[in-house]
Each structure stands twice: as structure tokens, then as C-alpha cells.
Image (cartoon, rainbow, N blue to C red; front, side, top):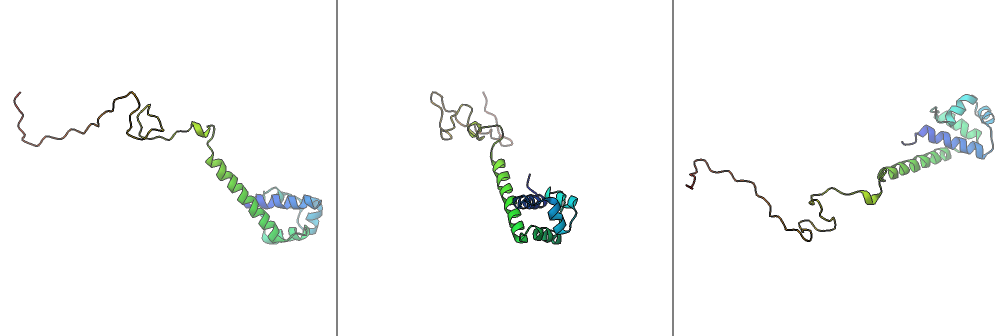
Length: 141
């Protein structure tokens, strides 16, 4: 599942706060936001307004554009990882997968279509029965 914007912003804020060795209490006082709400923002549970984000960034001595850029990078990395997981087969190795095609059973996948296997007799294609014209006379047997 993709990372939500509020989760990416919260993770970035928490990393910035802990890197600066600041406590939630200190940042909440400087940003004038409740300690509980700031904790919810950092955990990605609340969608903060742009004014609140600016106040938190000021309290952390961080530019708002830095916060948003780092959050955008987190989202992009998460999306790339999710796309990579979707490409990989689940529970199967790549060599175990086979592409369905019109080859007869037992035909090696490396052989071109229409080339019979060694030791087999090619079978002529069967054409559909043609309808008889109305009023056709049967030949006497």
C-alpha cells in the first residue's frame, strides 16, 4: 500500500525532531500546539494545516519546503518499492513461470511453432466439412 502524505510528513517531522535532540514537549510549546496533537501528527494520524506545519517547522528551525520535499521523496520511494513488488512473482521463481501458447503438449518451448518434435509424425490440419448445396444428387453406391 502507498504511503499517505500525512504519514510521510509525520515521519519526516519525527526524524527532524529526534535529529535535533528535541522533545515533543519542547516543540509543542514553541509551535503553540498541544503535545497530544503534535504526537498524532508525527504518527500520521492527523492531517495538519499548512499554518500548523509552518509553526512546527519554525519550532524545529526547519524550512517548510524542506519538510515537504523530504516527504515527497519518501512517497516516491514507497511508490517505486510497491511497483517493484507488483512485478515480482509471488511464491514462484521466474523460471517456474511458463507463457501459455498454442504449442501441442510435449512440444519444446524452444522449437518454432509448426515444427514437429523428433520422432513424431506431423498431422495435417483438418478442414471443416463443407455444406452440400441444396438439391445435390447423391451418387449411387
